[in-house]
Image (cartoon, rainbow, N blue to C red):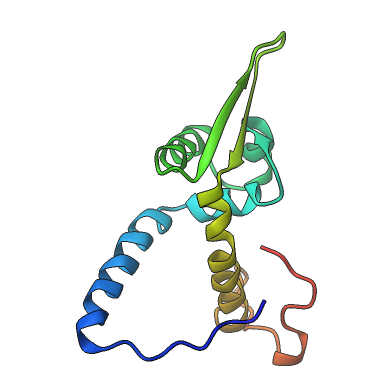
Length: 133
């Protein structure tokens, strides 16, 4: 995906852009929100599937994050009457629109931040080879 060159922001445009970024990161910066979105980028998933896939998240926190993301209009919650009753979560158009930005953040993290074991970023020639979120 090519990134369009943009003109530099004028001074009076910087404050609204900074405010929008602060608002976005207050929401996306909640622990697990971006991780849940990343998992749902592969397609709809049920609560148990997400709980098993996201190591370290408790069921109560996952439930809270799913509710936050649904109220933010980024995911939908679909209940299928059973038996057995099943609930699945999926990205909305707004959630899918966010995926390129999250992918860029993930790429930046791979390039610039140590991994969870404290290992430094991979050398430049091995970066992004076939990796998704």
